Image (cartoon, one colour):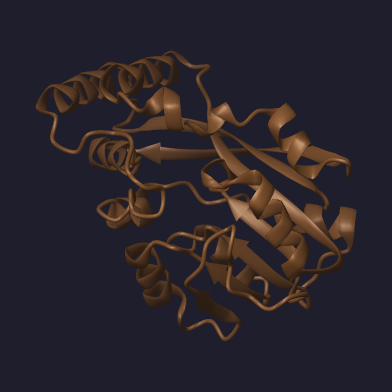
Length: 247
């Protein structure tokens, strides 16, 4: 398996165009539960191309976007450099390079399953102010509709690494162990994407475990799209899972 800090290097453009964003309702939820506001400094760990970072930048927060992958980090700098609160950082979850006590909210969007949990917990405690909130968030692709079930089967059939690196391997028990002895809260938000065939192709290829040059897989994807498209689109549904707590 490729190193987790380099495996997305050739997926950057597809990642930017086709990965789902996060529901804006997360912001109001954090405000209601924890008193979060635009004055909080945010550390976004494993920030990638800046999908989660931008959610908080648009809210007016100062965001330290910590990303070890050079290609993804440079793309985030290109896309988000115009926000006054954006700070790009070359670092990992285990060694962010941030000063101590810098963040009141620490976020990991679609990234926690790549981290060493013991070393990461120690680092997050170090960079957070006393009482800092930690939030782990995933867009978990649904497998309920006929299309979603067949799409899941297609990935399983053609992507040999899928079962190994899938973020679903991180379950509630693993997250609970990361926050322990503190308690962790889990909340759910609805999310979705609508794709034409080029978009669905880009969404598939944005995943690091999917082979990029497999003609048979592309034919299977086109056939799947043809069976289920309505008005030229298919729907990919997500359960956005938000785990929050104080480390």
